[in-house]
Image (cartoon, rainbow, N blue to C red):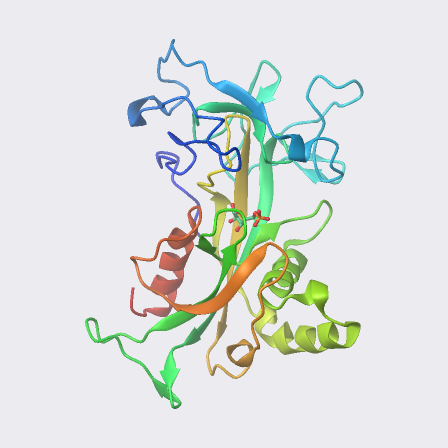
Length: 286
Ligand code: RP5
């Protein structure tokens, strides 16, 4: 299982307009050599932004100056997991600091939690076949792997069908729930059809392998709130379980399809890096 090396430079949460603000909220420019908090940057004075869409939501924290809101950092705080996979994060003037450095914006942005916001990503794969014949890539001669991707409603980018871990929820449940909601549209299915879909994915989701646990270079990250994930790989070797599922986009997804794995894919956040780990694991075309 991999984590991101601390010298990794986040890119997608720097030097851009903040997502969902129609270009109204612009991140302060942070050059590569000034990302690290310990680098001198006296002129660093980013805007503070917390989206109205998170205020008062049951899944979100309060403002840090709210009376009776006393989060305890770096531990499991009641039902809320405030532990980072990257180790202990620092607190500056009462605010958690992004362990991967400056992002050009303070506050929570559209993220609910101060500090780490935990997600889980199911990477569901099968071999590419035509008439039951496995396909080898013309350049590398290696077998081509396919994974289930969804198209996100917010950014329109293709992504792994992951989602936030609800407070108190175990990651294995998040992985199944998110996959069913986004790739099988379970939220709009009847009880009977949900039970059928559940039993179809049961065998595959029993045998997952963790490929990544840690920080996500997510465009929503800020100096004080950031995404972390556990990415699990579920492979359908014969293609007769999930390989045969009827995909139907739902919830926050507007599209769903099998995509051939290769290094040139442009995907949401740092999802391409987990797929590289999957490609290494199965020694397939990359
Ligand atoms: C990413 O955001 C994670 O890797 C996961 O795929 C996703 C979770 O956020 P939502 O899809 O719930 O917005 O950082």
